[in-house]
Image (cartoon, rainbow, N blue to C red):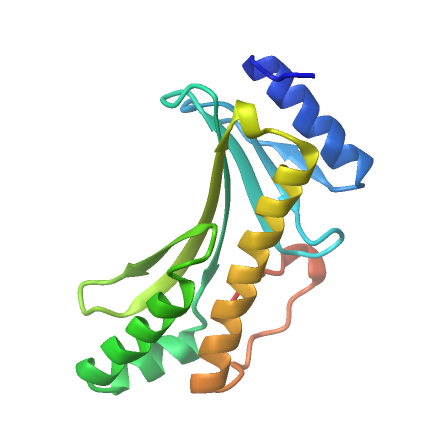
Length: 171
């Protein structure tokens, strides 16, 4: 079935997510025809968003991201700007041919605070396989960033919280 309307897209995506047993929450968003937050991978605290922005008819955007651990931010602040830029350039080079996009959010001092990933496609590409491929690509990019920062700066010590309050996705 060819998907040509927002309602068809929303219904198909919701059906596929439920078939695969994802936890799906609908988010109120005045800028989107629909906006879902899901657990990905299934049963984890990690979240991704599936959005159909009103401003872009027929576009589906899959989003996730990671906030850097305070420990990693402090270590980034301590290295010389030139070395920090070399590290960022290495990440950019590694991700340049990825099929999804990324954005490193820097503060005024050039310190990465978080990294966001997106995978976009239009209704003509909306198939279950493409939806889950985009979610997987975003998740792999997140794992890459977490691994890259952990390799460079060590695994951060994160406070333990009850599962229902945990914030996932620190690099």
